[in-house]
Image 1: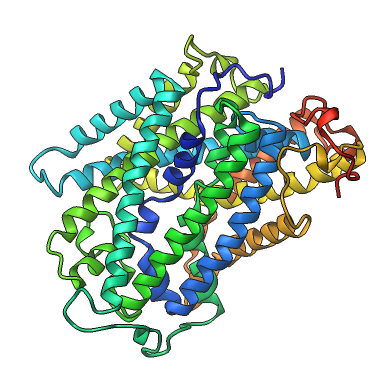
Image 2 (image 1 turned 120 degrees about the vertical axis):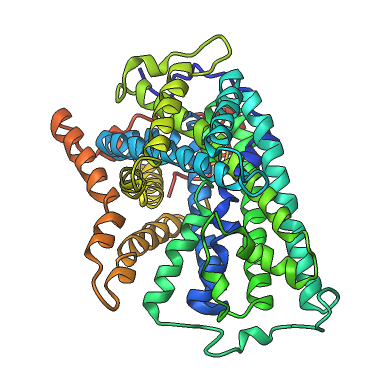
Amino acid sequence: MKSSDNDLKRVLKSRHLNMIALGGTIGTGLFLSSGATVSMAGPGGALLAFILMGVMIYFLMTSMGEMSTALPVSGSIQTFASRFVDPALGFSVGWMFWLSYMLTIASELSAAAILMAYWFPNVNGLIWSAIGMVILLLLNVLSAKAFGEAEFWFAGIKVVVVIIFIVVGVLTIFGILGGSGPIGLKNFTVGDAPFVGNIGSFISVFMVVGFSFMGTELVTVAAGESENPSKNIPKAIKSVFWRILIFYIGTIFVIACVIPYTDPNLLNMDLDTIAVSPFTLIFEKAGMAVAAAFVNAGILTSVLSCGNSGLYSATRMLYALSKDHMAPKVFSKVNKGGVPIAAIIFTTILSSVCFLSSLVGEGNIYLYLISSAGLTGFICWGAIAWSHYRFRKGCKAQGIRLSQFHYTAKLFPFGPIMAMALTILIIIGQSLSYISDKVDVSGLMIAYLGVPVFIIALVWYKVKNKTKIIPYDQMDLSDLNLKDDEDVEHSGECN
């Protein structure tokens, strides 16, 4: 059975898709680690890194948009890799994607405990983690619509926090808040600013920036449960990209203007030190004493949102793997509400086990599990770009016209080629931070654990099933969601 044979109910509306993408992207990376990019590469380097990453994300989102409207299925990343490249790639990417988000849920449970300790220091953190897990489980078990509504409000709160932060930051820059007069762009000329460090520092910043953008692709994972994917997915992709770009660029610009890159607090990326989050620092400079509590509440909402979208994405990927006979059949079973209950329960149990493992000894087991999935996002992004490149070529080989698509990605083939090249650069460039001065062998091995895991899964499936890269003229494009012939004006074949 093909993964395109969808048993899930199409109940997610356009507003749900918009917030799913935002909810999976705006997270602790923006609230906590955004300042680190300014410290590592200077204000100019940080802005340039975010702009270049934004361009890459644009191409990835348009690639996913084209494929998702043509083939609207849950677990789309795995399905596209399997059908347009090689089933072995789909298998390895799918399981790595599931592993990454399963572990993300575990990390969010840990974060929830730390954040609640800010207000309730005498309450055992396990209680808050358990409550958080129950909330996420209920939201996902009830229905896809319940998940979508929860994500809409979770993400909405985060967006409000970011908007308030940007407004307060701009007022501080102009001297309206803070009482110290206009700041302007003077921090762009402090020390070695605007660009700090060497090319290695800049590439290392790309890694931080890339992780901050991860989750953008989640909107297409929900394609199989969208009411009108031909209309809603392109709409979500177009609007969400600009919102994310404005939020991220606006946030980095405010931080770069108000806080000099030499401030040691910018390097803080720990959840248990909310007081020196770049968001908190900006509010404090504006003279707002409630900054820490406000930021803590925003990050807590972010944690719930990321956990919510993480559980949804992991279970839909498991569902898709099962539909393609790459996971046990039980995970493709859905209840009357169209929810893959077995996949949700299995993912929840393993996430809870991984969370509990972090409490044993020094938590080394959990550290290795997280590290093994650390590069999954970049690997998946590379698979998306490659799948789209081959999808277009397959369409051309089989005579499917570009005018038949409900949505087309612009600047092909430059877009996917640029995305693949930048993804490879980021993956390789991560090693620079471990070999720049003194080689950190253990750190290097932990950072790259995800790569051999991915390769082993790919090779194992390829050898076991004797798969090959699918020729363009043999791709299965028989069930694409295309415009009716009478609605199409001839405009040539795909190119």
